Image (cartoon, rainbow, N blue to C red; front, side):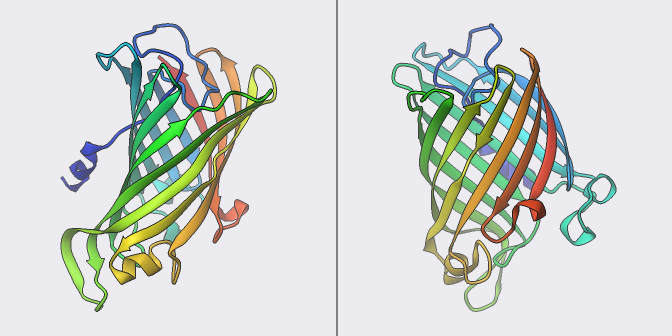
Length: 261
């Protein structure tokens, strides 16, 4: 099955707590490590998520894997137009996060596989490797800057001469910089804002010029979330994702429930 192409990638977690710790972790921390399950109702269908903290074998590191399946039954349960949804799956996301407990630095592998076509291929997968640094909190504010590079793989990619490259092919390389951030409103309510700038670096001309839209080699994306901690193990979160080409209200919207196991 073609989706096994994603099995090389995985998850995200936190620079302060060892994976073997069984205590309930702070779910408001964008980098917290814990085993979890989640589900979301979105404008493009249902999202499902499972995360697993694991023992790295090194007491100075902690790690977690996360797998997400997005856009299930979008035509039936979503509220976008049929041109933006299907009743199959919209995309997959796999992440792996490993943190060094001694200095607050972390690395992340992030793989996103989209089943929806764009200007360069019928289906695409972006796999990136990033470094993250947890900065000292400033009152109610916490910041986690990130920088990395990635590679884009396409199925039936469109070549520069207009021909179709059957099967999977490597289309090009991109760079990204961004930040996870948190504002603690109360002990139970917090806000996250996560901006990311992505730009193609190398590859075919069609990839470099059009990967983020017609004649667009780079893009600024935004993620905003408001969360409520129901109890130490459960939270309810509202997310909005948009970018410089799509305004806030036309972007992806979802309500997500998460439970820490």
